[in-house]
Length: 263
Image (cartoon, rainbow, N blue to C red; front, side, top):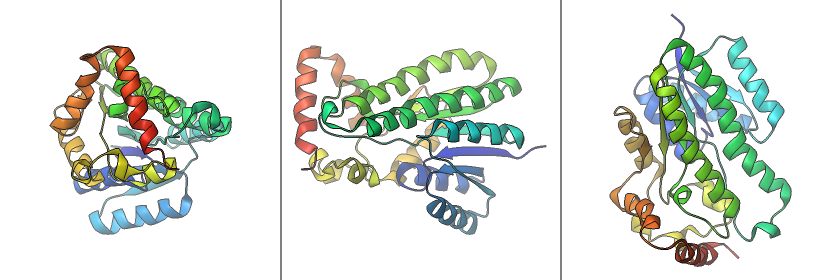
């Protein structure tokens, strides 16, 4: 029988790396996808040495449509069986949308939305054909609300949330599970790359570690929930947008986001 792999995108840092260790600790064979070849090779070697599992590497810039198509084609050509698809890769831009470069905004949509959807389409088809599998897409608490000063990012995470819930209903009867992870503020390179001051985003005691998010997530996946929100305080944040008027929500989030954009 073919080896069943857990495919993880953005697997060399943050939540993606922590998830890779959690799945490897459970004995999963891994197929890791990341943009930087050196970091990917280092991560794969560490996982093999620490957990004794098979780890395949695929270098792919998920902002490059041709590269994503080549990735999908290679998986199909090599006959790799994907038992779990973890669409973790993503990044944010912060500040006024019209002040950002269009190149970076386009790349954000490609990575956070289009590549995720393409992998769900290709791997979801494979899973439906065999009648099993689990897809986990990584959204954010931000996906539950509008996000002025992070407009494109917030919209991309709303897409991931709604798309995942919808896909769950389509693929469930075919034996394929779909869950969406919506973490709150998590300490990772994500914030520095987006030029967001993490110390202003949340009190230190409320910032989760990637390892904690990963432990909660992998354990929750055993129960096959539609939405995984680590920690009760983050569940409250996800519920809060429904309690007041949308105009007020937009104003509050705008003020909060504007305050954390690094100068």
